Length: 167
Image 1: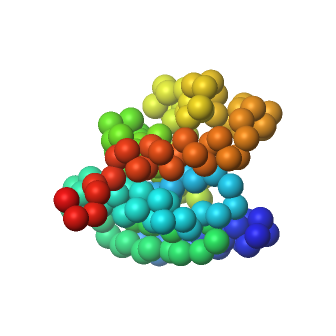
Image 2: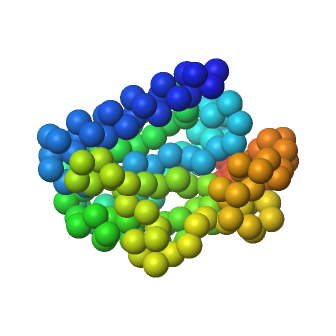
Image 3: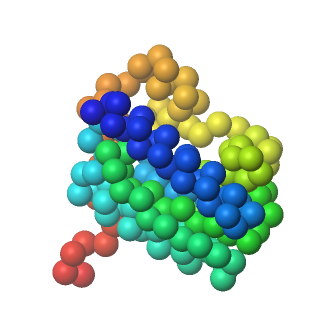
């Protein structure tokens, strides 16, 4: 399973490079930061639809190309956008910060030769762990929390913030 996830990530990055090469604009890549190997759960799918809508609504008519990718690493949306890379990153961070599900939205911006525009370019620190609030990368590398604990927390966040069917 992990090999398929890594292959999907590589395919997505190669698609991003091809889009940058073709359109000569930055690419926003949005996906759900869903823990574990099962990336296509019903919860992740519902959260992705919300993320997709948020990105489409915030592209300000500057979208020149859009593509949805699906695979073992979950769904992702690629948007070639006619914005300066730092402005595109600011839009992505605004969504991550303002939306109730923003903590699990993974929105990256790629530009130039495919380099990712990091949060530090806007003077922001690393993202926080959904469980304890520490640097998420440190917790992940150290294995500070079980996959089950993180999955349960993410699923609860999704359930608490998606519209109920029939409402």
